[in-house]
Amino acid sequence: AWLAGGQTSMEAIETNRASLAKQLEVEYSAIPLAQVLQTLADDTQVPIALNVQELELIGVDPDTEITLSAAGSLREILRRIIEPLDLAYMVTESAIEITSQDHANESPNLRFYDLSYVLPNSANALAVISAIESTVDPNSWLNAGGTSVITLVGSMMIVSAPDTTHQKIEVVLLNIPMMNLF
Image (cartoon, rainbow, N blue to C red; front, side):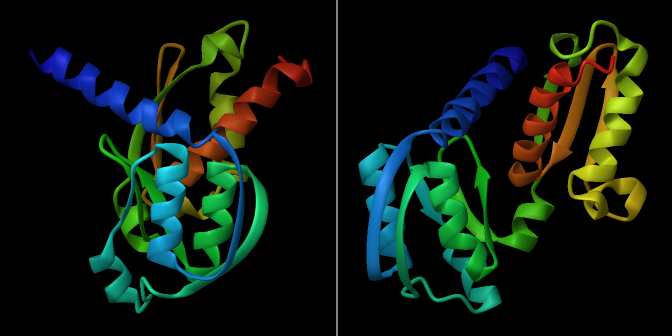
């Protein structure tokens, strides 16, 4: 039963994560943050939840006016809206949650990366981990005093980190096969 529950949870999270790639165009002129997020959710059919408690703790008003004209992925649109407010997003089973940077960092997501897709063998797996830890949010890793962790089990790299860190790891892993270094 625990396997089925874990599988269901993982599938729901991955569905919400994949939705961040949806492309859209937006035009907001002095629209309250909460309304902008609801409009994005309606337009993309992606549940977006605003963690009002966390926003209150850091002094961000859900009625903060947003002005933005942009086209791109939902991920990029959200980044451009929330980063200036020192906010972050977390991908959960039920929604993409907009929250404080601290809350996102304290609530990492666990993801699994099969390195056999990017490396011919596991001989250089530790070099990949070292490269990630030194280039992707270097201060966020446990060995640098942060909370993010990478563990290797066979060819499987297991990472516990905030969603924004996972996004950067994906970019690194996508580029490794093109380097022809290994």
